[in-house]
Every structure is written in C-alpha cells, then in structure tokens.
Image 1 (spheres, rainbow, N blue to C red):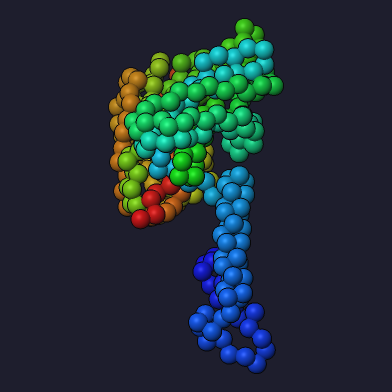
Image 2 (image 1 turned 30 degrees about the vertical axis):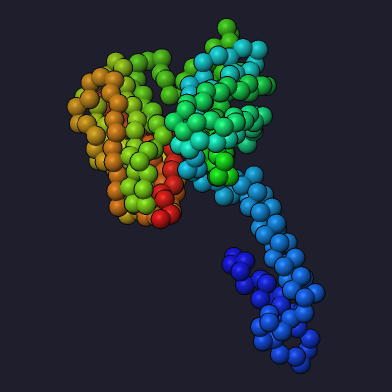
Length: 300
C-alpha cells in the first residue's frame, strides 16, 4: 500500500463540491493543520499495523543488526527445559531475544523476552530461557528469535528435542540408537540477492559409503517431501521449487559441509536441508535428512 497517496485523497475529500482543488497554496492555515494531522495519523496507523503483522509472524525478516543461533538443549528437569541461544551483533546498539517453541514446526509458544543495552558491534551475547510444562516423550521444535534496534527480526535455526522424564534427559530427535546416519543443518550465511552459503553436518555413525547432498528451493512441501524417497537419484528437481547438489559420493565418517548456492531470486524465502543416502543392514537404500531450515534473500 502506498501511503503517500492517502493525503491527496483526503484533500480531495475535504474539497467542497463544485470547488476546484488547485494546490496547497490556496488552502487555509486550518486546512493545512488538518492535513498535517492526517499525515501524522496515517504514519501512526502504519506503525501499528507493522507491529501487529510482525507479532502475528507475517512480516518477519532477517535483521541486519543481529545474527541469531539456536543452540542444542543441554538441561531438562521437572518437565521443563533450558533453551540456549547466541546472538552476534552486526551493529552496536540494543537488541531483544526470546524463544519460540511448540509441538509442531509452527512453534506456537513463546518464552519471555530479554534485552541487552548498548552491545558493541561484533559482541556475542549468550542467553537461556526456561520452557515449562514440557510433556515427556514428545518431540518439541524450537528456535531463537531476536529483534535488533532497526526493528527487524532474525530467526535462528529451527531445532528439535525429545524430553524424557526418566533422569530428566533430552535426546536429539535426529539421533538413532541403532547407529544410523544423522544429518543437521546450520544457519545460512553470506546471503545476497541471488546467492547464499548453506552449512550442515552429516555423521555416518556405524555405516559407510554415504551419498551426501543438500536440497533447497522455494517450495517448503517439495523440500520436506524429499524423505519420501530412498535414493539420491530418485529426488526429482523442479525449477525454483526444488534443486539438489551432491556433496560426497563416498562418505564414511562425520563431516561438516558448506555449499554456496546461486541463481536465486531476490526477496524470496528459500527452504533447505542436508541429506545422506546409505545402505542399511538389510541391504536396502535409505535416505535420512536434517530438519527443514529457511532463509530470505536480500531485497536489493
């Protein structure tokens, strides 16, 4: 919506029937005061609308002031967990942090927020929050969130944990007791209008000869449904919706990967995940993947 046209419409509305609206040079001081007031009112309404949309999660963007990281869950007891995060300040100033969590990827719950004042550029700020009333044996999703002094938001990687009331322990939902490979995805970095750097980690555990890959695209469902396949060759790409890049064709260990992807569209949300194809103990091909993460390309 272009707010700049609103005052002109309001001026037309205020012009008596049959009269000609030339320029503000012919307006009375009282009319000019009314127009100035309407400009202020429109600006206030726009700010309130932006705040409402942000609170509803409809205008979340990556903040230029803060880079946020969701850490692994380290402590759980009495049906609550400690969520930890780290924020790196790109610019000096104030910032606010909190966590979103829930039983689905929509992460419908929020912790209280915490602020830091006058943090210097380059500083790393660590913070923890308690998520109460966690049900045992259920998988929860969570992510760290920050708001910089510029008013924009930054979201950390969406991670997950499973709480066990026995001993108050947590286990990573991607881990496997039978030694199967695991995959994790980290935050995207070096994001531009048409490129980004993706980082992830694959641990083959008790298996070898893995085929590692990263998939990404504009379609969340296409990226999510990659796990419907069992082989790298069966993952069908589809334009901007889904692409894949082979990272290793003979992975036998625990290894971190970074992959720069290009040819992206500006001001667009992209989804991605790291995967590995392996042969299980029965000789069947399997494909395991990390959680689906996302980032936004720059506008300009």
